[in-house]
Image (cartoon, rainbow, N blue to C red; front, side):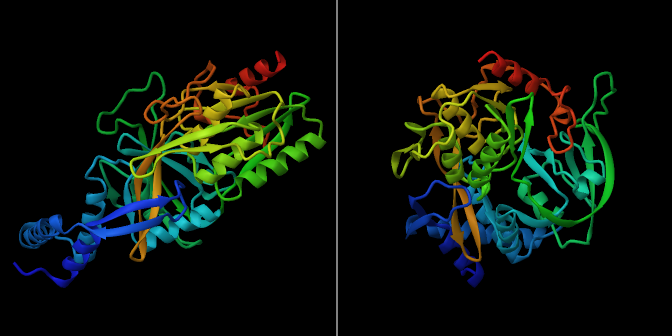
Length: 407
């Protein structure tokens, strides 16, 4: 069977063995060593070609070559059961890069994948989403006429983000409240549709405030490239305002840059192991505190919840295992795996290359980090420091303050 030129190119690319020489950082380009695996290339090529030709002949809506190629790449990446593996073509990769830099065109929400669906876990202040009434906890249901049984965050980002000033129509599902009758056609909640005008989104990094007299409160929204610098600056400002104890809020923080997690943990942990990373290719790598802690002894409580993931869990585990502070909230998400970003054509592939353990060796992936004080609470009752909202209603924060008063 003769293969089309496009499929030949694709198969040769896809059957490359990608070995990571270094770098366990989400958002960091890893150094890749590439070598062909010819034993599989002919069967992969033949299967891909047959499937593509079959769809062109029989499918109700056959894909074009570009769409099929992207699908096969993504399929191979996920063929080992890696739920975090993904292929980002050029446009999607550009949007991902924009989000990591802190500025992009969108509606102003943080989303997280859960059981084949995507939930809003943060709504940025003064964002188009907030103005439209979107709330933390809402589920994505449809974008325009595109309604699916399952979504990925990558698919949604491609549809939701766009040029500032343009509109996007989104249907969300608002979770049922106690006593509501559940419509089995909409098991996630009550659907509602809003048309939102996209705007330039400046991702907030931190918010800080003096609370309870002498407690410095810092909320970190994302481990982007400036997280460590921002937190250190916030601590200095709060110290100048009389802060003697700290609450560090990592709730609904879905992670980000691995390097920033190490640096942020090193603010409070002055020495020792921050995290252990185990890779099939490189074995075990131990990452230690950077040695420039500015608050190695201050009384500290971390707030975490079921949406605290990845980099947030690295910091939580380090603080807990070193006895540097107490954790209050809910068991964390349990994303203890490392996705490496590798250039691939004009885009990039992300695949799981390692998993990490806490300083004491506990597995985090699919387990999470357990708080010292477990308290559940709806997302929409979290304290908003810049507006002073929900201070008394935030029972997790109130518990954190109680713990600090006893220290």
